[in-house]
Image (cartoon, rainbow, N blue to C red; front, side, top):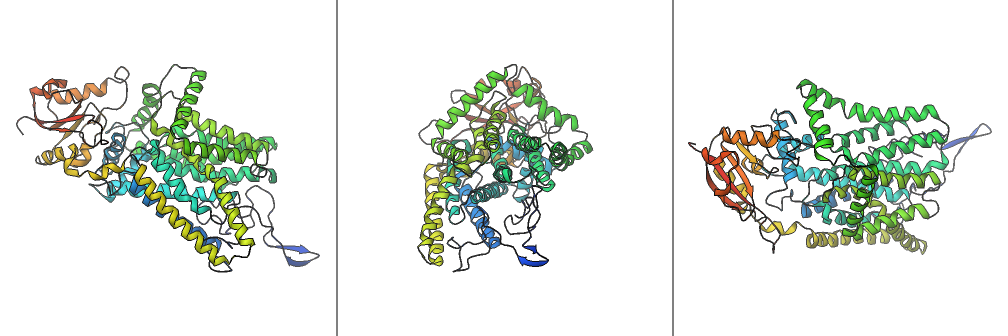
Length: 587
């Protein structure tokens, strides 16, 4: 078997053959027979066949090499990813603007990083620094559009789809399994948890798919090995866990279970030393490669305290529910997961069917420990997501990292039918042509399905000039070097539209209780009373008149110069908010 640590590069191209990840000997293709070297026969194994006969992308009788096949499916996955994100995410070029409040927080802080501001110290927010850095890179691609984020989202979805396909291959689906790639992409991006796009969970499920591939491969081979995993694979997956740690740590439950599985596998084999060494390699990736750069960054800027306080303390004590028992957390987690499963029955049923398929069918997870590990990994993933006692609809998107499991029975069934055709001596190039055509038709059908069922596509009918963000931006840009305050609500996209950097740490109002974190609102009100910003944006309900706005004694120093309804809402519903723009007197 190829080296288990070939996670990056061409995974099944045969590089590194002869070195076994699990610590057992591996034949390199020859053997000694009485002093005479003879070719060793290598038995075909599920998920590792060396021939693509009867598969799509074939080239006649010989078929494609495994390496070329991997590249073709990777290209197909990326194409599907770019297409589905273009349809379903408001960051794409088909939409006039991304008005999601969380997403604009990410972009504002990321833009600030690229302009010398330090997260948490200069711009107070709650997500991890890696997420802001990615949005900063996206801002470098385009200062006034969301093109950079669209590219990152598409790449993340493409990686998720490619590794999902590789997982299907682990269980014998070698011929036409790629046909299901557009189906999985559509189910994920059309779902309610996907919301308006650019969710941190999208980036994390891409990393999860990589680790899930290594995890399932390890469990599948467990009865045949001594439980060891090579250092390279442990280091890579620890680094992936570290990346998630510095984006949104509540999703680390999956990687905790991942490492615990390897640890206890080795303990069961009484390999104590290797068990603890494996943990050390994993932690070297997580707390070394993925963490040390941030320690250096915040250390150089004298902001380690601000970083740890905002990211850990505020999220744990000022955002999550505290004082609830473990039983209550478990009950809350089950209730949220149950409701989410009812809300997304198609993907939920398929994931459940895939899980049952792995647990029940012979040869899928052949050892009892593998079955228990998979169940506990899923449970710990959900507990990490919801154990804090809070729930947002988009949280459940991370659970779709297990969505690939739902396609395993379908992929296997389709490959079975293709195998029957091959057994009847149907010419391989005909089977390949049929598979390629089916993949194209499926992709087109899923594109139409996504367009008709996405919660966002109605927004493509709007134009920038009709949005409050751009209406206010035209006024703000009349003042050279203008400063702006997004008062009392999460970032509504006004900084992005007007191309303005915040001049205050509390550039918007986060979802923190005033009783636990009063300084945020107090500071915003002080800025208004002292007239330290040129423009202030208020968001109020539709029945609130400008004269009713009294926060910070705004009328003492400011004049209301514009009003706009939030028209960027689903047709048939009343606008949810109206916005007022106040301008400092004397400008």
